[in-house]
Image 1 (cartoon, rainbow, N blue to C red):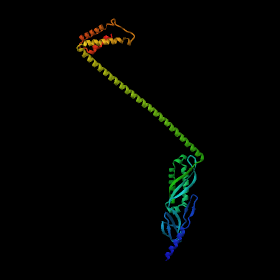
Image 2 (image 1 turned 60 degrees about the vertical axis):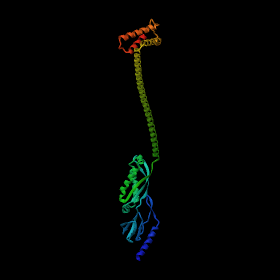
Image 3 (image 1 turned 90 degrees about the vertical axis):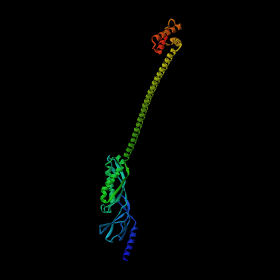
Length: 346
């Protein structure tokens, strides 16, 4: 009966403590809502993701786990309430000087979590305020190692260095820094104007370089085109000359074959009946043709004394032919014909 009454009294006091409006816990670095310290009602219910640090007669006793817990009245007291959730803290804007002596105004956001409630309660008076101040001093130190251009280009590496430096110092406080993100970086107006001028100059430089590279590529393309055109033209001329030489060679061969056939046919004709009469007719025709072309080739004309005696010329040519045929029976008919033409031309 006494135990039932004690449980009812503890439950009523617990409900009353849970209805208490949370108070605003203010620090110089940030503001956030924090629950008030619960009273010792013997029977306590600890919420999830919270750690209640209990002192017995002013000395650390234990840390209450989430769920149902029992405490001894008067002797036990909940001294600290630590949240095990991830905490987001705004790091106030601060001034820092870069390696090239440029004053910057920079702020950020810090993400941390309490891993050891005992160290967070007894290792430092105000862990969140301590971490915030550590983040500010570390940021000034890291910015002093970088130039202005590298601050904007290496923000990720700067954030990683910040987290590493904070974790080295906050390990004794039971706090783990998860992330640090830079929100805004403000530079002086004159420096900002100089940066804009630098950006414009860099863009003009890139435009000039790109234009020059385009002109160079165009000149190279034109030169390559001319080179290929010349090579193709020379190859075409070479092929034309080869084809022309081949054509001339074939023409010479065809002419020689035709002349050989003509000589063969002439020799066969001379061996037949009435071949001499045919030879006489051919010599007469060649004489008339040669005589008609005398004035066409040169201005000087040499005429024989018996120009009009065609029959005599033919008789003389045939006599020479007969003499050559008798003295040289093995002479080719073509040679005889050539000799006959020479006589006619004379």
